[in-house]
Image (cartoon, rainbow, N blue to C red; front, side):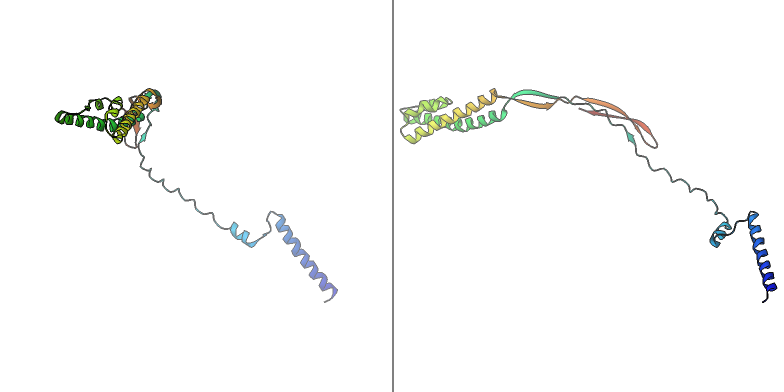
Length: 196
């Protein structure tokens, strides 16, 4: 290829390059990416209407809570009933058999005659001590003294329980009535509640 052929090929190539650059200079942008060019040519997707709203749920009745009322705590001084009941049990457990023994001895004395009657055993606490010196055996004497001491212990528990006061706390509820509105999906009304 000679010099003139080269020159003419060079001139043709330059003219092609200049015509391409003038075409892009007129406002056309050079395609950067074929995928971008393809996405620009796609139509926009259609806009669909919103789905219908779901139906409202069943609404439970709305009940206003009754107003809070404070129940006052009160205190009182009361006897210690536990000691009283325990004292009654101890006293009764030893007095009743002693009184029955006195009654049995009184009946025996009436029918057979005796030296010491059984009437002192009817006397609580002191009766066994009064009768103890007149019994013939030490075992009977010990039994009467033990019964007299046990009766005295029961009586002391009763008196101590009544005199020793304790503080007891308790609620003093008041009768209350309250009216509150009630609302539901299909109705409305009032609710009355009370505490007695």
